[in-house]
Length: 549
Ligand code: AMP
Image (cartoon, rainbow, N blue to C red):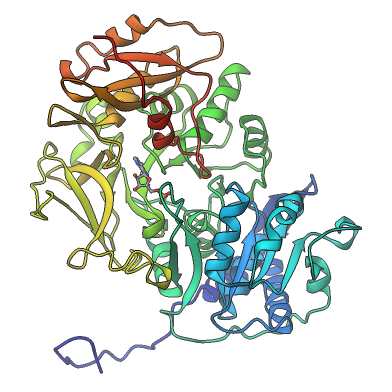
């Protein structure tokens, strides 16, 4: 029975389920010679085509069925961005099983928790993650076997891992004849656990339908704007929110795909960008900082790189300007979350902005952006009342759409929706023309005398100072105001700046009472498993900090 009260006349179009296997099949048939280039854990560069990727995915699908993997079973991957991981994306989901990507930067105990929670049947892992798997496999209760993603010559002579198989041996022993199964597009395709900064991580279970729709939407010109003329390098890992869906979007449009493996430092990335003529890349701001340091210290230029997609945390406007003005790289600010597959907004200009002075255009581009079609947003107060879109009023940001979570895996955390909307935990403003700007994560807002201070603005200003590499602003206890901002700063190598100069740097840039009360210098900020600054750790570290009276 239909879930809707009305029964209109039904359309007479073919009903074809939106399955991820359609994507690789399309890439093979229509962009078969397009390349996938990978930097391998073995240390070399591997290149092949979408046609070969499709063939090996089918072989792997046969291998999985030989291992007894059944529809709905979870199969885990613990791997960097590479072609074998790409084959597993299609082989696992395409055969009706669920691909569970795991972040190798998590603590081994947390990995074992996730594997057990997901009830993973097999675990595939990259060559250089063998010691990690050896450290936790004994705690995994459901895993029947482990597959090392390498050739026979790289297999270890001795290991504590039971039933360890070789990826290439499985491929070699399997037929390439495999017809992708047809099933309900709402079936689960992949599973990704949230970073879980507090409590245990929770699973987000994407469907084939949500994944394919998200890929269509991501490719659009005012979203990631990816076409068959691009060469795309996802720095964002395939173990976190499906690398922002790029392993689907890129073959969908037939672009060249470059997969960087585990070396994500500025030098390794720059070399790959130049060697493979990368035009578009996506990653978190900390990765871009590393790349920027490398190119500026070595006086390098990019010859083909033209669009950098940044998301995951706020993009410092100073970095955006440097990339654009000094290197000719356009920076696309995007926002989303694991629970949203992840893309929610992207920031591009509209026709009525084109005549504006550069500074005003830049101010718009610094925002998190416009909802892409498929995502609806609203801001509400703590009582759930919708707030105006005036670009000033900030409130809790709620979203809905076909690639937004409905409930966590196994119902963890109970009902998560508020009257059909998903509360993101972010605090934002929305302008009259629909541009959303994140003020803060609600947990990071600094509460000073009953008013809110957004830490992102304070960090962005600090990072515009020439001596500042990275900054985090946290609320610390104040006897009169409850909390006041403390600025925690990592200086650029060799740069000097005093506390007083930094505090003065805020003059005229922000309401006086938002100015941080104090500044402290550190060698590094704590980073989480996805490369974001862990504000809860910074808060914890400076819990007892005494602000100047
Ligand atoms: P995750 O699910 O780990 O990808 O984290 C999602 C969260 O990252 C969001 O709820 C935001 O708090 C934050 N985030 C993502 N993109 C941005 C952005 N462009 N600016 C500010 N915060 C962001």
